[in-house]
Every structure is written in structure tokens, then in C-alpha cells.
Image (tube, rainbow, N blue to C red; front, side, top):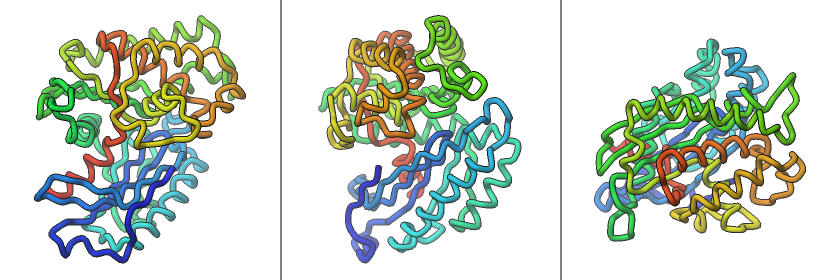
Amino acid sequence: MSRSIGSGSQRPEASGRTTAAAIDCGTNSIRLLVADLDPATGTLTDRDRRMRIVRLGQGVDRTGRLAPEALERTFAACREYAEVIREYGVPPERTRFVATSASRDAENRDEFVRGVVDLLGVEPEVISGDQEAEFSYAGATRELTPEHGFATPYLVVDIGGGSTEFVLGDGEVTAARSVDIGCVRMTERHLVHDGVLADPPTPETVAAMNADIDAALDEAARTVPLDRARTLVGLAGSVTTVAAVALGLDAYDSAAIHHSRVSLEQVREITGRLLTATHAQRAAIPVIHEGRVDVIAAGALVLLRIMERTGAKEVVVSEHDILDGIAWSMLK
């Protein structure tokens, strides 16, 4: 998915705005945002927003290392992003590359860092789960206001490939925790056996996944009071894909998905459908990106268990997330 607004020849700095480039490299995908930031109005305007599925976290849960083929896929995306950043004239001092769960866990993350520096001229920041949570919260909640029906406190959940971040806040972050449940990690831990994906998984396998997710939620709840939120905000590809299915979209439409509301009943029905479908049946759903076909059932299950645990009747879906938070951080 990519979306471009404006052209590289424009110079927004002349009107007091700043153009910045933010890169979020996670376990499953790497994403780029080039945006104009206007501190006077507090607005962020996309110039280019794109995503590539690279599966950097392939096998990390099992081996503790980044696989050579996963690194090459990631570096190929970095080459593309470097060209885009040059096109918009964004200098290194206004480019920030944040790496999350997979690169935190990997023994050979130095190899990853060297490759990124060579290609982009900036060093990736391998941030903590708490830092990741704060960026996600800032990006997701900046536009939410009580006037538009969004009651505080907010609980922001960012379901990634390797981890899920929980952030509770009321204007400012009051509690945050990252736990190791994500769509790729859950898929590789429970649904892949001897390199073969369970298609579909048995009820016993789903029960084991539920137990694993519930244990992680218990861990998160020791830091973040999950039942205090009045608005549940969901981020990242698993959540936006479930929303796209719930909306009945034939093609991904970020404008339709952004700030849509998906009920608990819809999430339960979609999760059940995905967990009982074969790979071919999931792939036939046009709005599911081909890079998510294998992992979307696990991601949907994580979302469902979170909603059941928190008592949320619906989830507000945000297309603005850690990328937007990273971009805003460059004004500080």
C-alpha cells in the first residue's frame, strides 16, 4: 500500500512547516511516512505513506537471529525508501528510523544496523517496548476529541508482528506495557509445524493460542489497568485488516478505515471465519494483503481476546499510529 500527496519540488519550510521522514521497521512490515508538520496548527499532512511486507521477524522467536533472506527483503525496501526521501529533499537530521520487536530480540541486530546506515545514512533506533507504546499513543490519539464522541481515558493497543503495546492515557500516557504477542509470533509459535502452516488450525491449537494470549494479557494488566478505558483504539495491520473485512471493502481504503468503529460481535464473527478458513479461502478475500494471509487469523484472535478482556463493545480503528508519533517527535 502506498499513498502520495504533493510533489518533491514543493518547499513547505518556507511557510513555517517542516518536512520529516519517519520509518517504522517492525516484525512483519516496514513503513515510511514523509509528512509536513505544522507546529502552529498542530497538523500533520501526508506527502508519502507506504508499506512493504518484509517479514523481518521470520524465525526470530525460534532461532534468536534475523534470517539472511529477511534482511535482504528489508534492505530492498530501505533502498526504495532512500530514493523517496531524497526525492522530497529530507535531510538525515529530519529522518528517524525506529526498529521494534524483531530487532530487539535478534542476536545479529548489528548486521541489520550496519545495512540501514549504509543505505539511508541514519542509524536505526532499536527502541524499548515502552518507547514504542508512547509513540503509538501520540500518533493515534492526537486527533481524537470528546467533541467527536471519543471519551477518555483511551486504551491504545498496537498489535504488531512480534509484540503488542498497551497504552492507557488521558491526554498524557499514564501506563504502558509491551508484551510478546503479535500476529507473526503467534503464527510461528502455534500454527507452523515442521515448516508447514496449520490450515486451518485444530480447536486444540486455537485453545493453546488463547491460553498464550491470555497469559500475556495478565502480564500487561499488572502494569496497565485494562478495564479503565472508555475508548479502545486499535492500531496496525491486523486491526485495519479486520476493519476492512468488516466494512466489506473490495480494496484497501485508508480513508474509510480511519476512525471506523468495529463491534465486538463483528470481530468475533470475522475471527471465527478466519480461524476456520484455509489459506486459499483467506487469500480469496481481496482486501487482505498477500503478506498477511498467513498471519491475519492470529492477529484477529489477539484483537478479540483484548476486547473480551477489557469489556470493550467496539474498537475505534486508527490509521495514524507509531509512524505519526515518530514524525511528531522530531519537533521536540
